[in-house]
Length: 229
Image 1 (tube, rainbow, N blue to C red):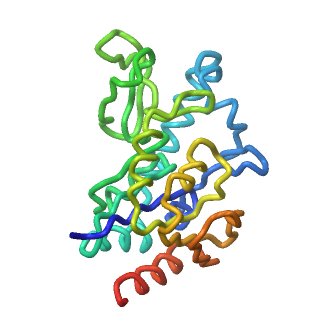
Image 2 (image 1 turned 90 degrees about the vertical axis):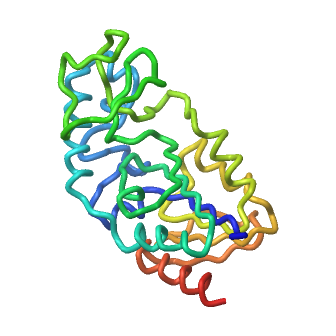
Image 3 (image 1 turned 135 degrees about the horizontal axis):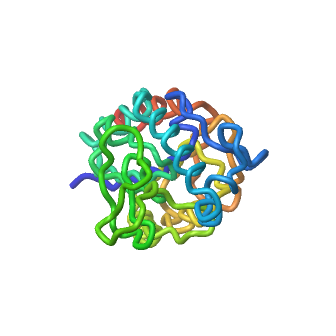
């Protein structure tokens, strides 16, 4: 049987495909304060602004292409039972060929009901228009988990992490909770590869291998180690 390889990815892996994501240091995303475009309060206050913001981000996602790191993770399915958990709202893992992707914060290429987040729909093209409604008669919004909203997939993700034989953390600062706490569910005996140009604080964890590189080169290094030993 193939071993379970669990991968937690963050903004760093998508950055090399040209997608910008806000950083906690300045709280800005494409020049916008995240609390003006990524909270339920922002949606209530100015839905047109929020909708347009995500329409533009969706257009960027659709124009972006999976990079070598995304593709290498997909190739690892030849050797492992690969489960990807991503904090990213793009669909680059799927387009690279990964079969098992859990989106913690939703996926921007789908819409959802404004009153029932379990009602989600594919989006034709790159924009959600005013007057597009769910089956309950409510305006459609991006299928994205905003600040202050529950993260419905977190328990499933924690269960996946608890079964990891090998764990990879790619391009995340471990600053956004509850996603940052997922590493706590990985068995202590499991080897944990941390790939990032700036390695987050992981001093209290066991069996850590730090690779201080960008996602594409760092993942290539880990893939070689995993497939040649």
